[in-house]
Structure formats: structure tokens, C-alpha cells
Length: 632
Image 1 (cartoon, rainbow, N blue to C red):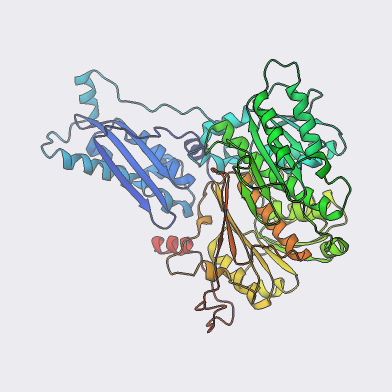
Image 2: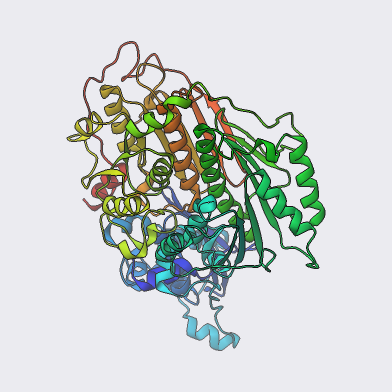
């Protein structure tokens, strides 16, 4: 989508930051996409000696801001005022047409900063003096930008595009992830499958794995190498190998034994270690920086009821299923915690985090709270679980950041009939989060790429694909063939269409969204609770965030997609504790999961007392409309 010059200024932006004693400050924004650019300037004798910026927005906005500072530094005020948005785009080697609106605010912010300066200095004279004359007079050089240390490889910049755009990560942060060495200790590759997939996708450069059993390793390694060739993944016989970070993940028996071995090892010091103890439908993990903290963790979880006698082993299928779902959920979440720890972003984990996937209970102060291990009794569901999962026919709208993990988990859980609709093709920038795709399938239809990955995992799967856009013309016809629908969309208008179509066809919908470090999940069951319109009433000025490269940390949609799959499984089995009428909101920077209740809107035009919607309407992307109007 972008040329190498744009990608370079995007990944390694010049002159980022503020100038505390700036002589002028200018702010400009694009209300359609939410882009905001702030320009700071320093002026000496009518020459811009320093120009810096802060930008919140898409890749085009960041690249344009960076290039603008290069063009403007050293210019006289008059010369700087002649720099246009077109000049910036041309200097970048051109921008895609749909991104011109995003970048057009850069020069505007510079002009605003100069106006701010001149308004403060009304006695300015000799406004036409050239930069050359001034430099000869002062015997000085203009302040040039310093290139931020980060990524220089164009393919890496494209691969990690959605990370680099986020100020908390950027090119420098991504480079640190690529330089990271991790040790993963687990019973086998399957027990940490999603953890390995997301660590690989986000570019953790060196991953060493220590397993009790190497069964399934060759297949896992092939998938990981194909997902991201930047990453080295290999086995090690040393469970105490030196690393920037260690993760121990497994059931109570495995995790406590491995941690005890680490405590009693002869190593002079241990690396920071996340230890995750998983059980059926629940689990906990904590970060331990030394042997003493590991000992305290083991003591705390034992007091809370986590012990080897509560491990699932081969008790019941419902327990095996619950353990699988716990491992998928916590593996994805630990990939996020890895990034937070290495880049020192967000709120550090200072206590044990506990999760209960049946009741949607989440506690990040587990050691001091009243929460304890829960013995779930799902015996009343036991006889029908396998058949219900095998018979269910589930449709996912979208084969991207949400659809990939959701379908992967459903396939692992025993759902044998899966359908996906997506018109898009795999791009390299998808691969930081869309873990069913691979480097080898770049350019292929996403639904075909995902189908290939799922069938390679389980040839008995029946995967139906629709390679068209989900639209008014096909929505109801496709939905009516399925028992349940999962939302894997990334734009607002189509989510209204999906909500309405599911309502008219009386199909349950697991609805979700993810952006940056945040996400949300809810369940909508027609005639049994509120719909999406009750939660988010449609207005005239809504925008669709998918129309620009909004940043997202790869495993964030992973966590949301896993939760969508779990919610779908509970609906299929008949477990009543779902998110119907409840919104689960996630902030991974704080490792917080908050649940809110919402009710049916009696005035809802779709499901209210006096509905006015009786058929599917037309939905248009707001930013596309705005772009069209702007061009006109």
C-alpha cells in the first residue's frame, strides 16, 4: 500500500516529540478519522531552527508529519508558509488516494504554528530574510533531525505496521521485541499453541522451548516458521536457559514442579518468569522476578485451592474442554504481558491474575481477594457436549484478527462445521495478529488461507468459504444456513448490518471489537435481550475506524477472538452464564476485564416496542463518503 519512503518515515519518524519552550505551536486534525497533529517550532531571526511533532493517527499522518519537519527545518518563515500538503505528499513519493485526506493536515498544523509565533511577535521585521544570509551571519547550521533507532528493513516495517503506528511501541519498540530471547516451558507444544503463535506473530525474535514431550513439535514448528520467518524458534534441553523472560505454562502439577525445579536450581539467578497455572475453565498467572517471589506464588495458589489433585487429567470431556479453553485464553494474554514487560508499557502486574471463564470473573489481586479455586460441575452437560459441538454449524464474518483465533479455538474444541466470509486477501501487515495466515499465503484470499490452515490441523473439518463481501444482498441468505454467528468485522456500519440480519433470521450473534490495547465482547440473542442497536444507537456522524491503519497489538484481537469462541461454545452447550445483555470491556494495559449490564431499549428501531426497521437497510462507510465529498 505504501512506498519505501513512506514506510521509512512511518517506522522511523524524524523529530518526534515536543519542544518545552516552543516559540510557536500549531494543531490540526481530521475529524473523519480522528487524526491529530501538533507541530512545535523554534525560531531564530525568522528561520525555523527546530520543528518537532506529535501525531495521533494513521500511518499516512505520521509519515507526513515526519517529512514535513524535514522540509521545514532551516526554512525562513515565508518559505515554510509556502509548503503545501501536496509538497509533503510529493516528497514522500506519493500517497494512496484514500490517504490524502489523512495526510493533508500536516502542513496546516505547521502554518498554524507559524501564525501562533507571529501573533506573539507583532514587531517582526525583515520577514523576507533568507536562510542562507542568516546562517552566514550567525555562523551556525540549522538543527537537523536525528533518525530514531528502529527498523530499516521494508518487509519488517510492513509486517509490523500495526505495532509501529502505536506510540507505545513504534519502530524502536518493535526492534527490542525482535532482539528478545524467551524461554517457554510447557508439557508439550499443544499446551502452549496460541502462546507460541502470538509470540511468533508479534516478532519475539528468539524463542526457545523446553517440553516434557516433543509430540507434535515438527508440525508446530513448520506453522510458526511459515507465520514469521523473522523469528527463530527451537527446542532446548535446558529448562533454565538464560533468557530475557521465561514463561512456565501448564496444569498445577506441571507448573508447580517446574517452578520448584527452578527455585532449587544451581543457577546464580533466574530470569523474570511468568508462571501460569491452568485448570478447567479457570486459571491464574503471576510475574516472579526472583526465587522468593516464585515461592510466594506457589504458596499463595495452594492456599487458594490450585493443586495437582484438581488437575483435569482424563476425568471428563467437559474438563478437558475447559482446560483447552483456559490454555488458549491465558496463552494469548501472556503474549500481551510479554510485550508490556519488555517495553515497560501499561500497568505492571504486581499480584496474581485469576480468571473464571464460566462466570466471566477476572481478578488481578487474587492473592488478597476472597476469590478461590472453583470446582465446576458440568456433569449435566457431559453426555451431549461432543455431539452438540460436532453438529453445530458456525459462521464467522471476517477471517482476520478476530476470525482467525475464534475459528482456531472452535476447531480445537471439536466443532466440525465452520463457515467464513471475507472478500479480502492476505497482506504481510495482517500477520502480526491473523494467525491462521502465513507468509506463504500472502496474496491469497483470506478464507482460502484460513481453510487451508484449519484443514491441515484437522482434515475432518468441513470448512465452507464465501469469498464475497458481507452485504445487504447476501446477508440473510448466508446467515439462515447457520446456527450461530461470530462477528469478526472491523468497521461499524457492517456491524449494524450483521446485527439486523441476525435479528431477522433469529440467530444468536457473538459480537466483539478490538483496537489498540482495548476490546469488548457481548452476546446478542434475538427476542431474549437487547441488540447491538440498544447498546450503540446509530447516529448520523459515526465514523468507521477501519478506514485508516489504526494501531493494534497483535494478541489483543486474539484475546477477544478466543473469548468469542468460548462464548459460542457455551451457547452451543447450553451453559446459561453467557454475556447476553452484558458487555465485557477489556483494557490489556491494566490487565482489566470489566463487565457491564445493558438493557433493551424500548425505543430501539429494530427490537423495541414499536420497531420501524422491517428489512435490511443500506450502510455506507462514513470515511469513504467523506473522501468522496472532499474530492468533489
